[in-house]
Image 1 (cartoon, protein in one colour):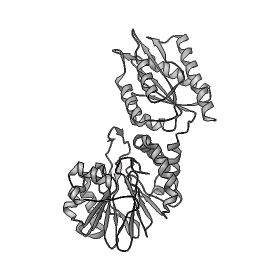
Image 2 (spheres, protein in one colour):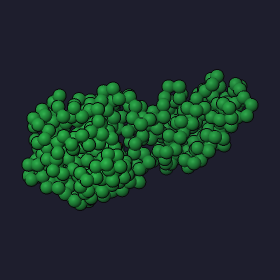
Image 3 (tube, protein in one colour):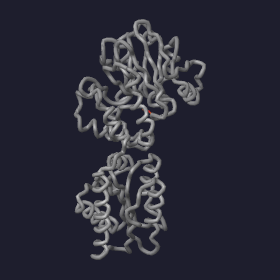
Image 4 (cartoon, protein in one colour):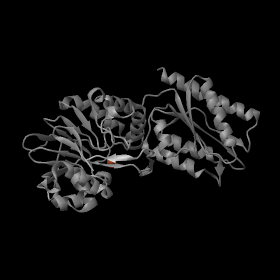
Length: 400
Ligand code: FEO
């Protein structure tokens, strides 16, 4: 397999995982790439590696440029998660580099994974490594999205290696963002941000604030997943991150629900009609069709989370609990919401959903709507009114 030229001295030598469908609970409908980069400096340098089963693919791309992997002098690990470090222990054994650099937390994380601290050298923000005819400068980006995460900037070629930051799960052989179909990329990048980076919005905002003061003259942003950024699209990922990190309420509601005998579904449709009648937008997501990571991707730019579940054995549906547990961990901000559901004899689901929404600091627009068995005309009118109240509040918040 061949490497792809990024700049005169930088080659993409990563792997394409066309078949990846799941990434720790996140559905990756479009596969992914594990990007690694070869820097043809006086000291040949490998930036990150790949998931363990893809090591040979990376080697074949490296060999297409330099013939022999042992010509690599330096390895940098910008992120210790195993989609980038899985191949690292064997690569170190087989390449025998003169040095392997990682952040201070990266050394600890890689050692806790592979017991290789003796082979690693820690670097911190402001440190640089001399590659002979160019330098690598490091910027720690703690909790974006792991404690060890860092960026590496290559002088001369003006490439910022940003590990998971500004990346997306999108399998493509087209290495540049401007060669790919923009709507696919924006959707996958938003999904990546929502599922991976959403809890770390304060860190993202802080990084974006200090970014200009780093005075990095950047021509290329090269993340560890998906396409690289250049030219007119170079600032696009920064703009999108600023928007997503702010989590400003929009007039969009996400209505997600499970249903047993279609009663909660009927409620969901009527609530959605009420939201629309108030002039707001609705994304309806039956959990029969969507999983947790699809729902979170829609919640990223939504102002309301509206959740429905029937009661089963004194609890909400397991799928609803799955999605709520996942969303709670991702800590979305600035949302309003409400719960609803049909029940037979006890009806605990609405109270259970409210516990989650309250724990997430979602402002409840309604105490929650419970309907016994099958909703009748008056019940459906109540659903519509609840939706209308949510929609009116959304429109008011979005115009502030
Ligand atoms: Fe792509 Fe956090 O690993």
